[in-house]
Image: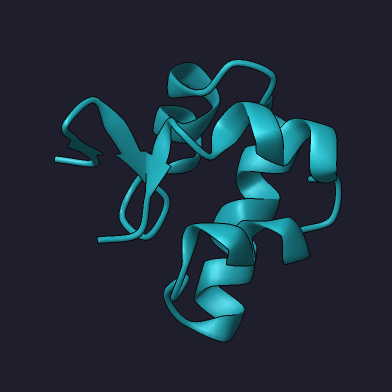
Length: 70
């Protein structure tokens, strides 16, 4: 399951699970998250998601408590 303690695991969730499970993240950004993971390997930290195009400080601030990488 991609949800851990109510958080979305961005290393295992599908595009659909990410876009459905995270407020402010639509299909386009969710696809970029999955593409980044497939190209670069699993996210090593929650903060690494900021490297994904379209996720800035404001978006990250809203996400960080709702995602996990473990």
